[in-house]
Amino acid sequence: MDRLALTTGRPEVSARRQAASYRHVRDKFTEARVTPLDSETVAPPRIAEFPVHVEGAVAKVHPLGSATSPAEADLLAVEIAVTRVHVLESLRLAGHANRIDPERWDPLMLSFQRFFGLGAETRPSRLATIDEEWYRGSSAPATAS
Image 1 (cartoon, rainbow, N blue to C red):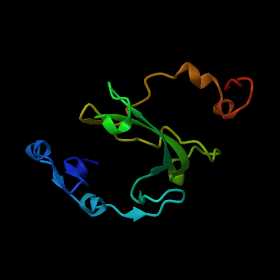
Image 2 (image 1 turned 180 degrees about the vertical axis):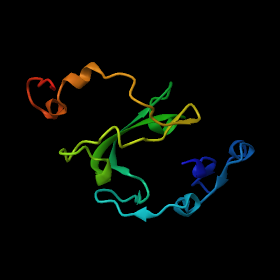
Image 3 (image 1 turned 30 degrees about the horizontal axis):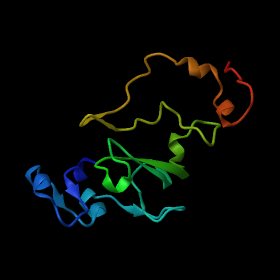
Image 4 (image 1 turned 45 degrees about the vertical axis):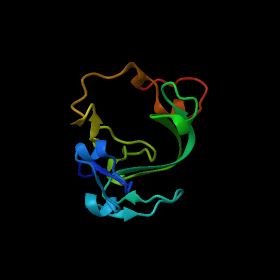
């Protein structure tokens, strides 16, 4: 992610962006030194070196600020409908095909221009008393034992 931080896919780099050291990069896979991997439900490729992939399609675009349409907005919120999720087998919770083991996955997150990972669990959530399967459509909460 950081290898692409000051790049843009647009051939015309604005003076403002140039002053901030942005530059045009046509092939971001090569620039980031990662391998493209075909997606299954969408056209854009995934990144082979990543342990988790989420494929999705744009469901809705929301203009932010005072704009009344996406075309006139400076900032957009994009709602995505997830169409497929890929997770390395080594990250899955034993005995559960559709769960990630939180002790095996340490995602890298960008927050306010700084990178963070996950630390040790500080305390369990009260939500942990409800079995995850309940969220998949069962009508009554089944508490975990």
